[in-house]
Length: 121
Image (tube, rainbow, N blue to C red):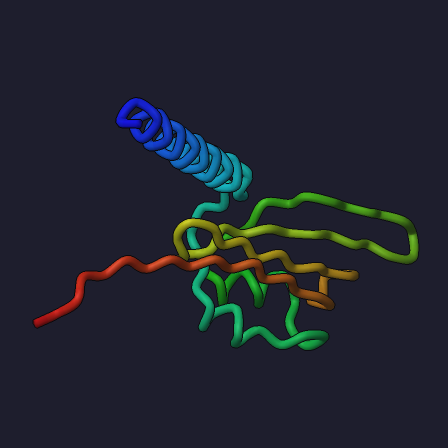
């Protein structure tokens, strides 16, 4: 009976350890995929952006640095760029902006912010 209990606890510990390793690996891959922008943008700076009124230069000035240019479509009539920035949250924060003919037309914010704190008192 004692042997079965030990085996059960070893199995539970093994499954828990495997889950922890899997979660950590997923987090590492997500962090590795973040854009290598020169700065980490903040949510208040992103919230201050205005669609269809700001140029790419205005957005760069507001966010503090140029982002990573991902996609560029350049035809005689239209020029579309998708630019990415790393956010200031941990473990994962990414902001992407879509510019059409140099004007901000779309944004996408993916923010996961984990905060660990000890109780006071």
